[in-house]
Amino acid sequence: LDKSDGTANKGTYTLLVLPSGALQLVIANPDGADVIETDAGVITSGNWYEVSAVVDRDAKSMSLRVNGTELASGLAGTAPSLVFDGELLLGNAAQGASGVSGFDGQLEMLAIWNEARTAAQLAADFAGNPTLEDTLVGWWRFDEKSGDVVVDSSKAENNGVLGYEGVAGSLPVRVQGQLRDFPDLAGLTPTHSRLEGGPTIFEVGSDFAGFD
View 1 (cartoon, helix red, strand yellow):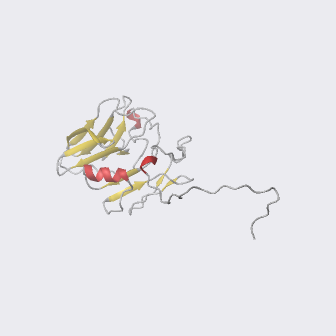
View 2: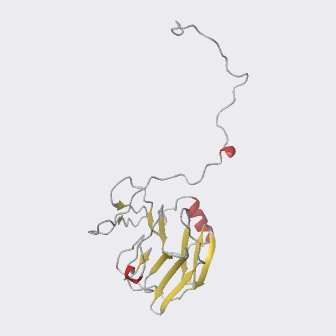
View 3: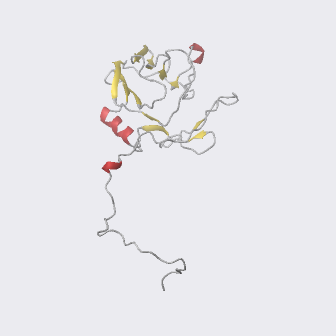
């Protein structure tokens, strides 16, 4: 996830999955860049993760959470972030020339707020769909059946486009959604009533044509 001009450590925000399996968050302001990074091996192939990055300029803090657990935190400058008019890139970065390669994996949803979310808010966001607040400035669900447009379900309506225009082989492949967790069938409450006495079983002849 990259919003920058392509210069390393000079982006509004950049979230990377490093080759070591660590997550790295970089934010920049006129005074310099702030960087936090999780331990290696946090992200491994074949698993789904809920990742959140929070920047709170007022509190001078930034953090990374994975599946609800804070795994990295640090200080963030109070000066406003650098602002770039370029595209928000997902799955790649404008600083690709600096050794950043494309993301090799699957993405289910991305949401961006223009406020610092609390741990409780993040838990609620991941438990269901985000609410359409004015602070929700981007919400891409990647659930379109076809085409190269990714619809932004927030009020901002910043629709995206899959792939790089004119770059062969850059279009990602849509995959069928999958059930990642089995429902708790034992905890379900039936909505029907049990028949008392059991069903009645009887035998009919081969020439039976129904009741009058």
